[in-house]
Length: 181
Image (cartoon, rainbow, N blue to C red; front, side):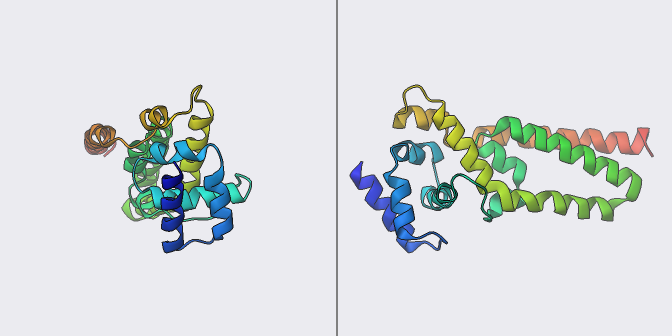
């Protein structure tokens, strides 16, 4: 386990971050650290730097940027196993997008879509941090194996979600064409 900690400190030193090495070392020295890495699954160096930044603020929000969550928010939420939030975000964004499109046209609905995606880029890392800390705090026996099973990534859910999103868009197109011309 000491090897894992030194490896992540090395990653931190190489990466660009707004936190100091001592703050990062304090974060990885925390007893819950050993479950963060298996929970994250991939992109561990990136997310550990982000998690350390939020931990250094006392678990409060700090601005960060995540391109994947900004450009593909629904896929990112499902990939990171934040299913409930992904479903809610999808339906809220789709409903508002459809309403704006029907009342104000394509240009305004695309502008609105951009403004929906911007917060995902800014808040995505913090959202994932809160998700991870909540899930890990609820573990009765916090081991690396239980963290790996609870967290990690899920390409399967992305591949299930994408066809559902396509079906939703097809249904919307049919309704738009035949029911609400």
